[in-house]
Amino acid sequence: MNILSVETSCDETSVAITQDGTRVLSNVVLSQIKTHALYGGVVPEIASREHVEGITRVFDQAIAEAGIPKEAIDLVAVTQGPGLIGSLLVGINAAKAFAYAHDIPIIGVHHIVGHIYANATKQPLEFPLLALIISGGHTELIYMPEHMRFERLGKTQDDAIGEAYDKVARLLDLGYPGGPKLDQLAHTGTPSIPMPNVALDGYDFSYSGLKSHVINTLHNLRQRREAIEPSDVASSFQTAAFKQIFTQTQKAIETFHPKQLVIAGGVAGNQYLRTHMHTVWDVPIQIPPLEYCMDNAAMIGMAAYYQWQQHPVGWTFDFNGHARMDFIQKAYTEGEEVIR
Image 1: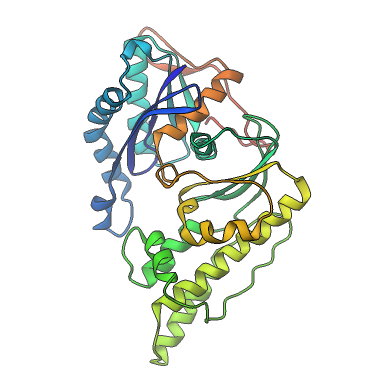
Image 2 (image 1 turned 60 degrees about the vertical axis):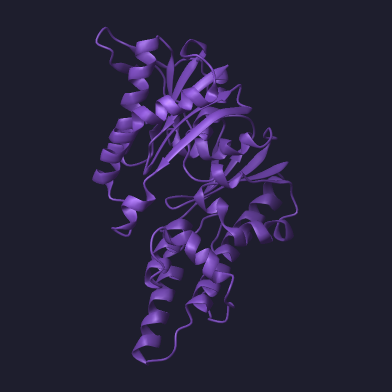
């Protein structure tokens, strides 16, 4: 089954073609990092305009690189949410237009489900599994007994880990995107600055307090005109941030005994995590290649394959070419909907 997938939830314009949920035939990603670096973060209106300018050529390049005719595409999949509404609408409308023009069924895919299934680009998932989602907007632990069944065990009570990374990086004047730069800087420092030990019941996370502690620490040092070593601040913050990740995830592993721990989201590319994870968790770990950690359409195509196997009903079109949802898929046991 050949699936053309589209991802435009934030500031990457991406189109991919995947096959049977196991092979990536093409995965084209047009990044907007240089544009948004001028503003220190993503500007939603600019992101939408950039998607409009790039979406057509990304479609053409993905189809050309896959080496298959348009007639061989069996399904169109598109990120429907969560994300920046303007950016999402560009991808959704482009996917709808392609599907309508070529009479191909189309489905919407939840962005976070896509990140989980980015791991399928490496090797098949094994169930039951525990999924750790760590990104700029999400820090979650999800239990999956089988494909497309999700039970959210824990989530951040305030800031996500990636958001905290970016804010601390901004305090250290590291530029945008700050997370990878802070990770790199941390490897040259030592975790010598005391940080709070966040202990939460259950499997939830919290990064607001840690972020505030860094803000206050830097403010106090500057007020006293004491020297600030940015690499030590970065190292101390990073060690504390991942201590929480390691602790909460280990508790879930000991309770649910998964066959596999899969890690997903942009922070899955963090080198500190990749260096230490096998020494912390005694369970088979699946983590995507770096190119599939950030937002990309291949992960949406992988998720779409398994979603279609269980729910082979997508959007239908009226005579004007407008799409209409035919189903609502439930995601987490607490009632959150995958498709919104």
